[in-house]
Image (cartoon, rainbow over all chains, first blue to last red; front, side, top):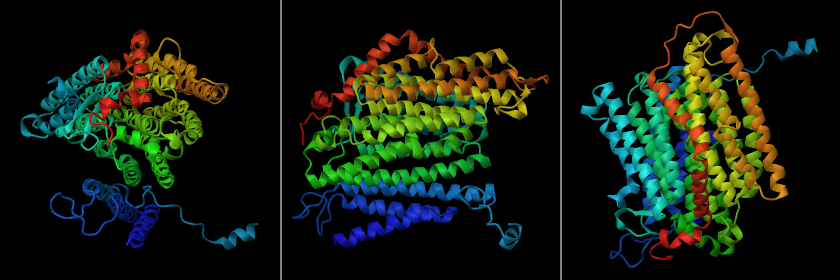
Length: 121
Length: 503
């Protein structure tokens, strides 16, 4: 279970960071979302993974640490609000700046006609 | 009443911000101004009262819901945090005063946002556990996102997207670090963590070290430490003046967190994990100074110059963190108060200059002269002298104290040239900009309105700090020295911070 769990967190983080480094706002927003999923899973596992453990006293024979669950809940709520904000901001940037590039302007196009350069050289 | 005092600097701006959204106060701008200013004044008063109380009676612990630490949520008002909330409340008041001149008309909900931001910053300074530090970071960040793009415009959205995306990545890293630290230490209370960190097993030490350094990266992002400082110039330069002035404290929240985490948890008592951040902070502090100085020389306008001076002040503060002794922390706190006030004032002066020079704004080009050359010139001169560290004002005292805190030859070799050369560069950059802004002018009359009373009042309130910090230098340095002692001698106050004993 631990290996699968760790692999999932790793994969989510990898995809999140990869997407964050893209040039357009939509992949970046998706990347941030994936990163926050990875973080939530990771926080949840910081209280150790345990099957069939209850978080409330007097309801079970085996207990699990309730604090990470509270932390994850807080992190989910905050992450949700932040994602909503950045989605709106990305749409506003698309409207204000006329493109969806994170820098607000399209990168310069690669130089065309390489043949001519050769002739000059 | 006095037992609930530590909660007031958080509760007052929160309730005030919410009230300002409701009909009786929200209906007209005058009522909003009156409400916001009175709440900011009340917050400042409660902060000052709390500062006096914590100075007189020692650390104030506020246990929310009476769930005793290390399990419950606590607010810790010690000398360091009360000094900083007083500074924040003062800055919030000045920023609101300045905004009353018309910056509040450019968009909705300006006052509630400023008050909520003040609440977030005060909370971050007061909280005693590291997860609430994260929560308050998010509160202050989401208010700052909205404030940054307040008023709208291409530049603001462009800078805003970078700022928000970077900080969201930062928040994710913060949570990763918290997860690692909770997994190894089993607690999130800062005082409790400091007692547990020395007793970790070999395998857990590596994890805790990773967590601690990850936290350094996160706080470095907020504080604009070198490789993570690129967002700052554009963000601060594009924000409106009262917002930029309020943001002057935001980098200091990062510095404060580094002080708190890397002196209390990973400080002298951490066994093998003692001072894990120091080998990183030293070079990064000097490089931050270098980057800020180069940026200051290359800035095309006064706002960007001021933003770069904020980076220089962050570098100077990081040196005080790297020196890692009580004198350095004390000097650093003095410098922190000074640099926050003066940089905030400089942002406001830059805004006034840019309004009065017409089309040229605050760019360093020849233009018509400003409407009120004497008023603006003297404000600029005082701010410039203070920020560069020239004798009659507070920057000089702060820098001298910091130079004295370097104890051995190696520390002097690295710290002195860094601080002195960056001051020299600051003088060059500011004198160059001042001569261009005020003396290289055409004969056109300025058609701009003179500065309003609100704006002048706000700047005077902030600039009063420059001479006052020198006149009251004795009591203030005594206070910061005691604050630094409290920060470094954690075991002395553990019986106060963990009344139930170690868990």
